[in-house]
Length: 131
Image (cartoon, rainbow, N blue to C red; front, side, top):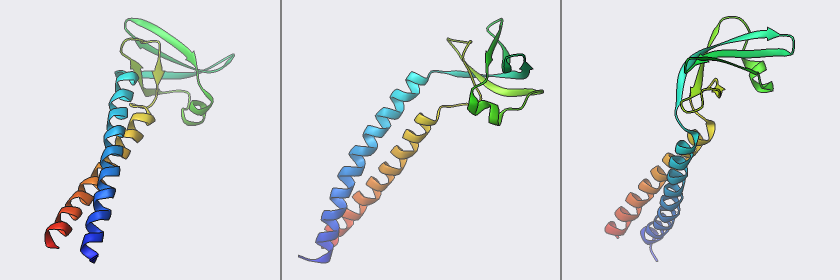
């Protein structure tokens, strides 16, 4: 068995595994984006209240308020307006990042796996044609 045949076989196995895994990650990415919903930009103000730091914002014609999470307290400072995002169908929900980390991770993983699958497919095809 020649070296090119081994390269072709290994590349084909890698291609199948990474293309299937990348496709599954792409489906999971699409599902996670749908579940996450649409978030619209707004401005929020962090204030010090008697019960701790709270964030206030205006969305859909109403004022909203909630306490800051422990993680948010470390990042967000009170005072000036902060860029924030509210959920389109639930304006009482607020976050400080434009998108969730789960869809970002799934999308990145899908892109990496599909890229590896494409390279492995080309390598398998070229090695098979040369031999």
